[in-house]
Length: 131
Image (cartoon, rainbow, N blue to C red):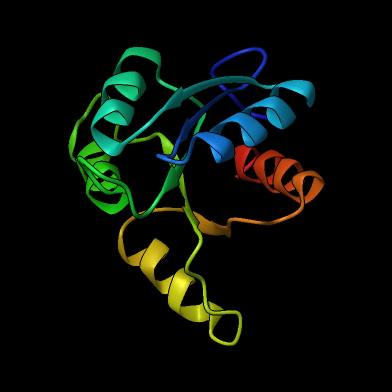
């Protein structure tokens, strides 16, 4: 894994406290360091201060949505190279290309549908870190 931190640092940005808690616990138990933020604005501050190896960013949040936060990360020379993967609960299983297009058009690596198995989440995070 090519990362800036040992263990790799993941920033998890989501306004749903249950999602934050479950994903954070699973990722930490899998050997990652995890910091969390409850909205895009807070996520920007945490990303700027910590320069995580990967950001898992919810798309729909109050204060600042994930797409806007991701765009601001990539407009800032200090954070433009941080990898972002969108989290979404609104994925259409019959048309996953819509989510892939949303991610790619906005500079994110990919998207993860909330509700994915926790072991699958960890495997995808590992794969994103070696890209």
